[in-house]
Length: 392
Image (cartoon, rainbow, N blue to C red; front, side, top):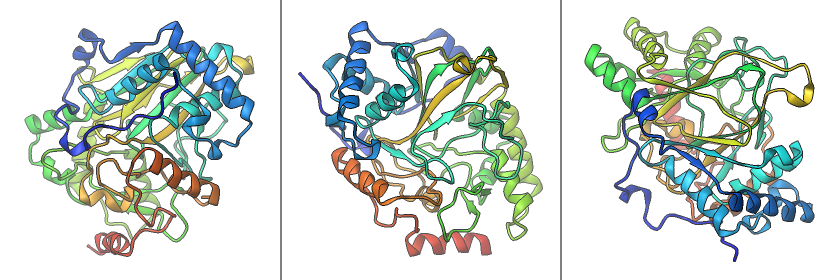
């Protein structure tokens, strides 16, 4: 019996079970954030991939019907994605049979499973829907540099979506360890040490788009680090992009001493071993992280000489139907702040008609809200708000 995509039975705003604070010792003590799929589930993903492959459809033309999941596969997949909106704000799902798949088959399977859980977002200036996370010789600490195509250690940051999903095809020869830190814990520590800095992080903070903005938008945006909603915690930080806005755009307001102190303290806390949890991603692991309640990074890595063994992960940025509301002051960047809405991603300069059709069709199938204006142009009121922030 095949199972269609599942949407929440109650709106996200009615949920009682939400992400909570954790420290690294909590993840050591309670491993419930790790799920291991059964052989039956793994075989189900393989059969779905084989079926999708036989159809030969372009990715953007596919629906979840083209990637039919049997009950064991559908159940473990939905459990994993639901976990990102609950206690830990994350999940590590182990056991995808990637060792049996070519890279193209793995991409097909990855895209297919994503059709059951949300709406994929574009991720870079070329508006790609899936990124190869591997060293291509690029430079991280350069103008408009991104980390996913380098071997460098990355600053702690949040990605531009509800859930960032990483599927490990091959780990590195050495290094490349994943690190995650609870944003809740970071803010709690700031309250203890420097409570006056909380309000500073709720004020305007400008970031560079790193060249990924939609045509017609400026190369920077304002997005406060800590959101203003009392009932739904949200934090977003990316120090590299904050520094880039200062370096590349003289019209951006300069960082105040207090804001610099606050960002420095965030950097310190993100790497604190009491808060930061390191993990190794093994072949066949799928890591899912809620970007509003944690920051993540990665250590530098060294690759194998053999091209076929080099570190390679696949990345999807997903909007999910059971997402929480976002702070209203984040609307300019994310496009929509309503719970269960299609939002986030970076539009880039190559949004196609095929993607726009996919986005609308997939939002309807997932029963998600899709705001007019996500064709790359912000609604007038939102754009005006962004300009007002700059003027301030």
